[in-house]
Image (tube, rainbow, N blue to C red; front, top):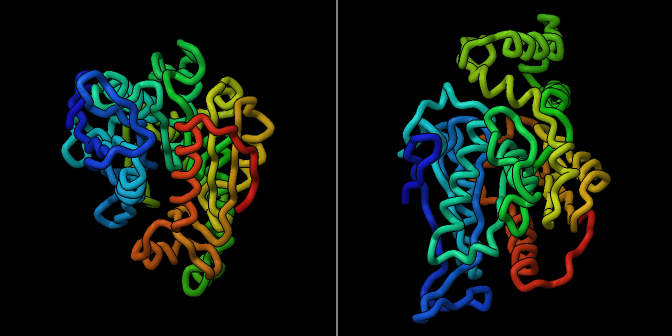
Length: 337
């Protein structure tokens, strides 16, 4: 399927349940079914509709879509601008452009005849969780300028799922991330840092400051080769706390206890900010990739982790929460698994 956003055609996959009619479906005149649906929003980087990159095939969204469809819940996942089958240029796409695209995908779902427009949820992972937060606060229109809410909080959503989501500014989160990554270094990498007397925090801040000063969409950098500076500037400046305080739809927040890219402590911050029904879980031994790993946390383990499926506890927590929302069950407010 294809939908339009800011004059661009973005491609995606609308996955609806099979021929058997689950209790979550409602019936249209003529007998066709309308399903509750989840808008899936991937994390940062040049990732496709499944949240996969050629060097990091996460397939988080692909796995979740299949899991939900088997349980009577549809989903829409899509390729980012300039990725996969979508038009546009990834390197000139900012954080607020990504919010605009997610809002366009939501509008597409609201009009779809096989989707129950009253039961649409946003699910985001990492950056996608920040975007889902913004949508849940009703901040879709005017997103490019970082505007506040333009409609009732909730933005037409029935709820939102935040996987590895944030509750403080992007800059604060990336500083925390840098410290955790530095502490997790082992072997030759740790040795080189000591021998060369590299101050990782100082090097990271230098790179962040360069992005903030830049007026270009992208520039070269020693750390990653090429950096989307526009996205970085906007993400650094965005603080989800204000949006979290405006949300009035149910929220499920899940973070792994071994996440070193997004602070699991954000769940406590969210709980103190969100006034809507809120449920949170820190899943033991789960990393930022939503995989279980009994070893010490570190980026070096990611290559092995992606060979394993998304942790079933994460899938089940998401599915069970969505089913409760669809059926109108009383919300839970929980911490831990």
